Image (cartoon, rainbow, N blue to C red; front, side, top):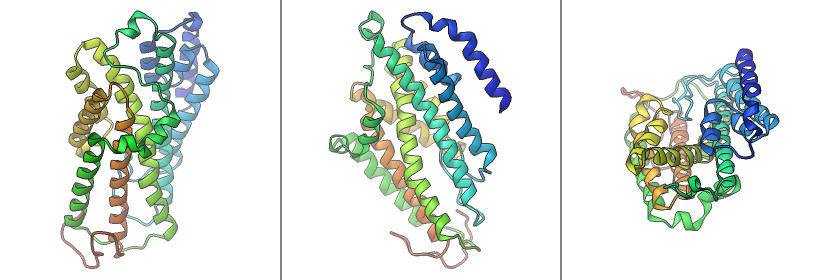
Length: 310
């Protein structure tokens, strides 16, 4: 960890002379920040801000990875149903990881966006095949609750189909009941993590990066909407564990098509992504409760041993 921070500082110092220009290529800002945390702000002439962002991103991410035992949680927020009652530390570790990684994603898009806005009147930016999303983080947070977004067939049809599939799967998947009890506080913490932390960080971290930045830039490089969709969806898929990669790829395609349909506006995709994650989080939380023999919506409690593990 210490050596990584040292390399980061040296990289920022080495590249600092490149910030002397009045304007910086937005693509260099975005790709640079994606691979070197904090470099986007440094390229834009704010090295102090860049180091502060990098410190927060790396500190929270690696704090969640090494400082708190992560247990069965994976980097993209999906979880394994726990096998012990000790949930507090894994949930804290997951939440720190989620914040660090998705804050990095958001900062990558933000500095790319700001650099592009500085060059919005240039020929290169006018020639972009995908318009630049110009909203703020406040607009992103409000997007899932906008009636305009929720009233779009692109959004409500995906939310409805996901809800039907997840609830059906939840009702018909055999579950092995726990041989232990989880405390009420840990159970509540688990529910908050699944229904709030993961949906918020996923929506305002992943959509700006993959649909707002990567798809926009790769479409310009390839001059092909299809190629850009495949590239951003492939990169999005790599964020998911192996058993979720098929659904990750398909959702990446769908969110990309949605962004193209709305001329670069990522807010409808944010709304759909958020509510699908909320529903998924609720189902995961209900599964936790059901495995303890508790009443849950849409399914009776599991009180006897079953032969097929969840």
